[in-house]
Image 1 (cartoon, rainbow, N blue to C red):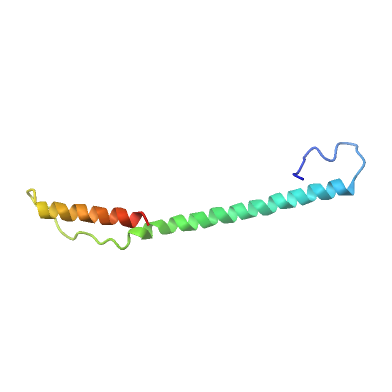
Image 2 (cartoon, helix red, strand yellow):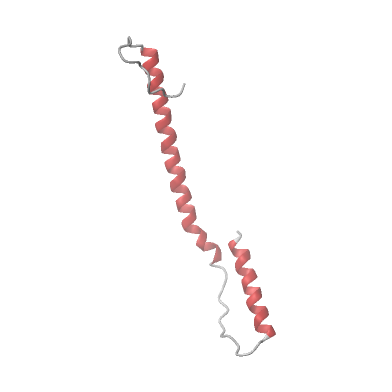
Length: 89
């Protein structure tokens, strides 16, 4: 039974079953929220590690050629593909 903030009604006789049900519902809600907080912390920790996906991609280690160089352009494209694939892991 979910928590019902309207119970017990004003000036109604006390019922132990009703109060127990209310307290049990509140306890379950508190436990679920604690779990949600842990999930949020786990997600935050995982996101901090996502940058590591690209650590295996080395830099090109060369300067730009002053004119069009097909070989150099292919190396740039290959390195870009390598980076994209690393980030998809």
